[in-house]
Amino acid sequence: MDAFWEYFSVLAPSIGLALIFWLVMRSLFRADTGEREAQNRRLTGEDDRAAREEREAREWARARGDKAGHGE
Image (cartoon, rainbow, N blue to C red; front, side, top):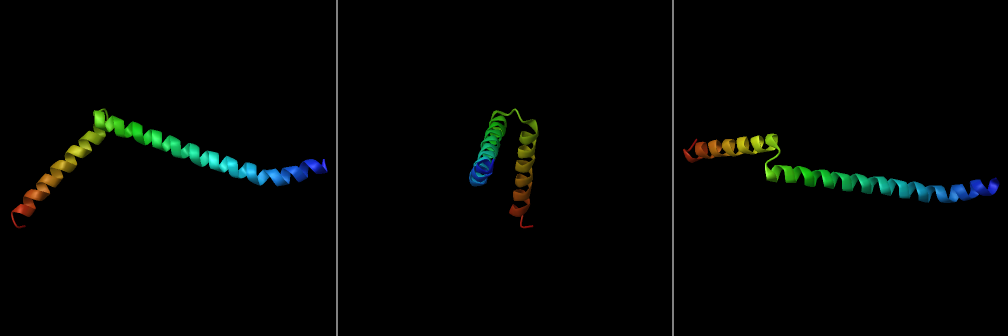
């Protein structure tokens, strides 16, 4: 049983780091997949909220540009 704990103490840090690396990479890939799906929804017009916010931002920028053009 002493040999088991000796091997365990040697291998545990490597296994722990591998597990942490796997979790980080999995979260990165899932986030990237989610971002690509959201971007695709926005580009295809399926995301109504994003489209509305983009339209409001353009209207605000246009109104702001009109005010700047009149010397205010």
